[in-house]
Image (cartoon, rainbow over all chains, first blue to last red; front, side):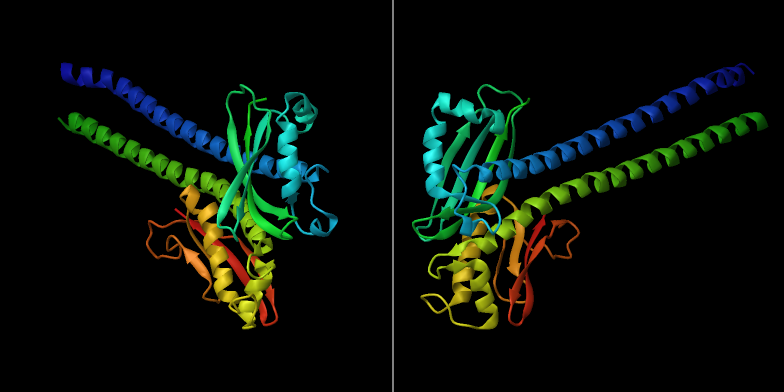
Length: 162
Length: 158
């Protein structure tokens, strides 16, 4: 009799504990799923911002290709890029580009397939001591006016938190 | 005694129901999160991969003085081109160089090829029937030739 009474008393307690465990497991999965989706969304945003930055950079007259080359997709003139990098290395000059390029670091890498080499150029560095830096990259071509050739290139953008 | 047995049966039934609910939650969470995350990741990969393909088509093949698109088209059509007279070999060399720069460098598993031709390079068999190989993205861009449209495809897998 006593045992039955004890069992009957424990029953609702056991049910509450089991329900609490179920709710805990569900919350754990929901939080993990939400975190994974947030990461995927952040990556998608980074990718779109990389393309947007490429659009901005290639529209600059200081970097844009001759008109005959711009009928195709994004293009940066390699010779102009080297001059621009020297210009943007000066902190005073760099300030003029901050409203457009913001707190970011833009690296240009291109492959000279005829020479079998790759070259990198720091186009712009406005990152400073920014925290929470995200990185993305996109592909396009650099026009070499000397060889009259389009070289496969990568634009790597590091962006600081705004 | 009968009541005691009934109580035991009820407890066993409750445990069984809880186990079923927990199994359902686990299956939902695993299947649900995979499609949610995989879809966005696939879109991101496809966008970056598509820009890679478009840039590759525009890249000038060094000894041909012409874009990869034209050299690959010459290969498909069987026309001689380039200083070496071998557009297929020249296009293949560019495929290998670009994949080394853009894909091998980031440890990607991929298959980059012009469909219907022998031109291509792969670091993994993305078309494998092995269930452990998961195709992440497979964008393609058209390559116009006199013999019809071929596709330059990049398959990325995990």
